[in-house]
Amino acid sequence: MTKNTTASSSISQGSKLKWFANTFYLKLSLISILSLGGLSAKEAPNFILVLTDDQGWTSLSAAMDLRRPSSKSDYHKTPNMDALVERGMRFSNGYAAAPVCSPTRYSIQFGKSPARLNFTRVLGRNGADHNQMGIPQALKAANPEYFCAHLGKWHISADPKRYGYDVHDGKTTNREGGFTMKNHIREWGGYAEDDPKRVFSLTNRAIDFMQKSINEERPFFIQISHYAVHSDLVYNEEAFEEVGNWPAGEVHQNRAYAAMVHNLDESIGLLLEAYDAMGLAENTYLIFTSDNGGMPTLPIQVNKGEPYSAGLNSPLLRGKWDLTEGGIRVPFAVMGPGVEAGSQSNEPIISYDLLPTLADFAGATDALPNNLDGRSIRPVLKDPESKIQRPPEGLVFHFPHYNVVGLNEPHSAIRIGDHKLLKFTSSKRGLLFNVADDPSESEDLYEANIALAGKLNAELETYLDAVDAEKPEDSNSWKNGRSGATKTLFLSRYPK
Image (cartoon, rainbow, N blue to C red; front, side, top):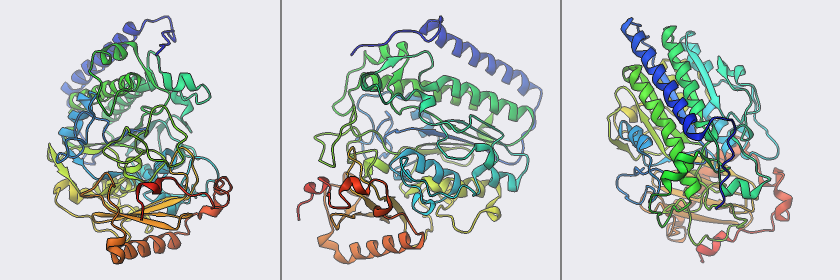
């Protein structure tokens, strides 16, 4: 692979990294001095939400399911993300609300499924009502002193200030993170930058915000939405050289991608150091998750649903753009007061649970709308064996679109308990899996469990009808599938 070693400034790669380090440790010194001054903490909890981009369930060197050694990378080394997971509770069944980025970001802010929000794809129509309550508004309803920030990728078609963000980067998308798309070699070949994917500057700015909140004795919420590890593949020289000394795995082998993950991990490490230096452990929850599953292959493939010989999210099937487990099951962990270190919950949770959870901790539940899909996971954080009381429909996913780099057929999914139903519109076929025992979705149980499949299908249809979800024929991709005549190649995995 050819590396682009052109510096974005006259400062060398090594000097730039040292600059970030020196800046960070200067901040730690200031924090220590201020701490001696006896700054008082508010009773209202603080929240830090770290949202990564396109990060797969198996991309960390820590297992996301302690029962499954294969639920971690066989190449990447992520000691800081691992530490975050180990210091709190990992969720083996953590889900993104959508298999693509923007709908999940809406879902996080508003506590609703993409189907209810009427926005399920980045391209094409956006039927979402932007006049809704966001996270800062909910927190400020309980305590007007909450200081709220969103840094990084926003990807919502409304200004963050509309929802009560005091500090933000505006209506950012992938472009601000270095997404070129039109240059295939540059996008997937990898290249070096001083501040790859803005990972270091985002964290430094987050630390500044957190310190300002402490100085002003205000409770805070900050969402750090990383541009990593979305393409382009960008890293700094130090990471690329270090990763080159690691033995490649059977599943993960891409050096440029591993270097980008390594830089993201370094950034998370700086955040954790600041968390400790500021003494936030007693009143601050740190949440870590991704907007959708990881890339199924590198580089991208026009696959039309045909089974991959191997995938980057193995043992999960496929990845981004699909409602298979690889596309929606993601890293999910929470650390903070009262959360047992090293614990694991196997209860399914999802992106749209975040708003009601934060509102629950902040005492803002009375301010929440009645039509949320999310539920507070606070009881689970206290007891990992707890169950979340959800409506009968469980977790619902909806992707009514044709997409040639994905399954290439509109499909929906529902998970209730251990079972998950995948339903394909054009093929008029359903698949049923026990994803608790079979996360690889290798054995279709539909014909052997007709009654259960029928129950899940009825719940799925009832929900989609109730929220007036977008229908495949309303999607701008419908004509690409010859008005529903095109059928996915994916179903060849499961002959009847």
